Image (tube, rainbow, N blue to C red; front, side, top):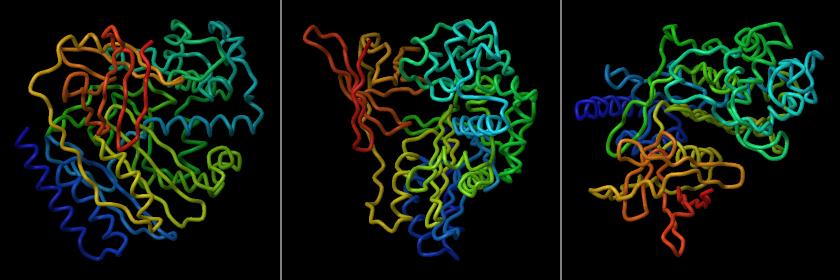
Length: 423
C-alpha cells in the first residue's frame, strides 16, 4: 500500500504541475482549492467547471487503477450511479408523451402477478412511494448478472416495507421494476430505450449501460477511502441496479446531458420536471465507490461536474465549495480532517447494530469481522460511543438511554448534524 501511495503522489504532483499554465484566474483559484485534497489522495476523478458559458477548469486527477498506476483521464468512464434513475424518468416521460404509459397506471397492468400490483401505481414507483425496499439482493447476489425481468422476480418475493402510497422510502428496486414496465409498455429493451431517448439525443457518445462480461474500455476502478489509504470497493455486477444505477460514462457526457435537459433536447417535460424554480438542474448519484454530481444553471452563468471513483468526504466538500467559487463568493481554504483514531475498538460492538431512522430514510449499522460498519463503510473508533467515517468525513456518536441502551445516532459532517433513531 505504501508503494501505491507513492506512485499516486507522483501522478498527482505531475497533474498539478501541468495544470499550472495557461489557466484562467478562476481556474487557478479552483486549482489552489483542490490541491490539498489531491496531495493527500483524498480525491480521484474528473472535475469540469464553467462560468458564463465558458470552460474555466477541466482536469482529471488521481488514479483510474491504483494497482497498475493508471491515472484518470478526461475520457475515463465512471459509474453515474443514481443519475441513472433520472434517465429512467426521462424514458418514462417520453413514453407518456407517446400515450404508451400513464402515471396512474397500476403495476398489475404490465405485470399481472406482481403482489399488490393493483395497489402500486407507476407514479408510486417514480416517487419512491411503492413500499418496495431499497434493495432486494444480498451483497453476494450483487456479483451476478440480472435482466430487468429477473430483478422483477426478486422484487416479487420481497416484503413491502409499508402499504403502497402511504409514505416514502428511497428504492432502487422500484426503479428496476419501473425499467421492466418501460420495456413491456414500449416493446423494446431498456438498453434500446436508453439509447433512443437519452444518450443519442443528448450526444452522450461515451456512455453505456453496464454489462459485466463486456470489457468497458477506459473504466475507472472503484475505491473507498479508509484511514490513511484507499481500498477496493466490493465487487459488483451493476446489472442488479438496472434502471437505477447501471449506466457508465464520462464527465463531459454528463455535462452534455445536463445541458440537453435544460435546452429541451430531451423534451420540454423533462426540463420542467427536473429543473428547479430558478432554472438550475442538479443531480447526484453515489454507489460502491463511484460519485457523480452536477449543478448547471439554465442561464449558463455557472456550472460544474464532479465525477469520482473514490468515495471520500472530499467529494461533499468540493461540491459545496465549487458552487461558491463559480458564483464569485468567498470561501475558506479547505481543512482536511485528521481524526485521532483509537488504538482499540470499542467493546460490545453489537450494542450499536440495528436500523436507525430519520423520517423515511434509514442507516443500517452492522458488525462484520469485529468491525463496525454503516452500510459498506467501515467506522473507526475515536472514543467510547464515537466513531469516524472517512467516506463522508463524518463523526458518528451513539446516544444511550438511562439504562445504557443505544437509542440514537448523531451524524456530524461538515458542520451539519442529523439525528437518527433506532427502531
